Image (cartoon, rainbow, N blue to C red; front, side):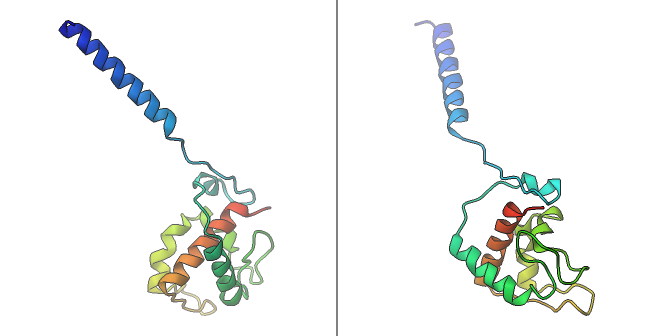
Length: 137
């Protein structure tokens, strides 16, 4: 085999390898979030921990539902409190982890300061991600 032939073979192997690699790595699936802004459509669906989602749902029902709509539909009891299913239109809900750990305080007296522990934060984020993906108009 000449040097040119060896280079051609190596080039073909590289192309075949890259083609196989590209074919084997599926892009993430996306779940539309009707009823929320376009931004919520671009977050990839992650594996759902149904136990964490259930714990997060119980948490928001007990601590947030007095002011916020906490489910995939419905209006908030307090008009100024955004439905939790719309948080993903403002920023990725995973970005809220630090805020929940440090304590959320929202500059108006009606919003209580909320501080959560690590397992509560994980459950809350799991629920918020889930409700963004299942919201309906």
